[in-house]
Image (cartoon, rainbow, N blue to C red):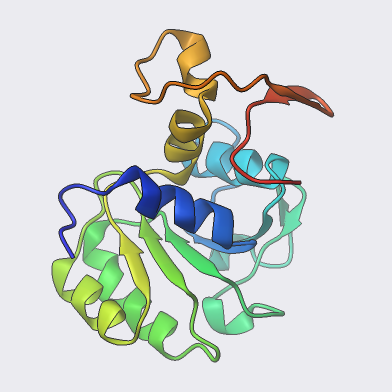
Length: 173
C-alpha cells in the first residue's frame, strides 16, 4: 500500500467500520493533542480505551485508562498510536500479540514506521500513518470546512443536531 497518499474512501471506510479504539499514548493533560483526540472520538460515539501506564486505573476524558494493550478489557477494532516513531516497533509487537488482532493500526501525525506497517499488513491489518483520525473525521464530514479550511469535500448535507455540538458526522450514531 502507498502510505504517502490515502484515498478518501479508504479513510472513511475505516472511520465508518471501527467502533472501538485503543489510544496508545493518551494523555490526561487537557491541553495535549492526545487528550483532545481522545475526547473528540468519544464524543463521536466511539468506545475509546486510553493506554498510558503512568495513568492506569484513572479516567482520561471519562474513559478508564489501561497500562498496556494486553490489559484492555475487550478486543478493539483500531489501535491509534500517539507515540514517537521510534516506539512503533515495540508497540507493533504488543499489537501482534493481541487476540483477536485489531482491524486497523493508525499512526498519528509525524508517526511513521514502514517496516512495522509491512508486518501489520502481512497479518491483514489496515494501516494509516502520519494522519490524525480527528482531523480526517472533521475533513471528511465537512465539519472542518466550518472553520474556513478547504476539506476537499463538497456536500449539501445538513448538520445533525446532537447533544452538546453540531455534527455533519460520517457515522450513524
